[in-house]
Image (cartoon, rainbow, N blue to C red; front, side, top):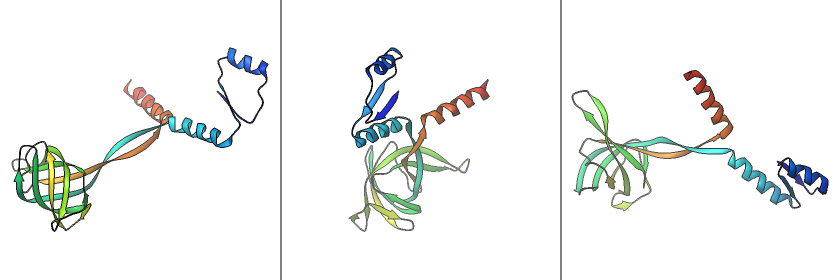
Length: 169
């Protein structure tokens, strides 16, 4: 590919480029050129998602329970939680003394002192209306997470993949 700005292109040169299957992009307006280049660069970047734990809550009470929806009360024991976050239900296994992931869920609404809020900080108690896969029990820990973008250039990703394949051989 050949990219130019405000350059006359000779017919003979264009013919040779066409025969060689070289694309020519010539712009008369600078912002059109920069927009095009930005698009090329963005195409070289692949956005991956990474799960980041943002807070934990200990379940202190269950106020309403249906098949897939519950209203619970709890205390934020790590960082903070925000409305609409997804969570994992962690339950202690008495036999192994380890936390096991029971199911996943999502906050539908978050309340503090009967007011709907956007977030609740560590040490505060709150009420949560949530949608979940399996029932939450008193004493469960809800681990809240969000997905954050990780940008990685496609060329770097291919190099890493190639290095891994070489190691596997």
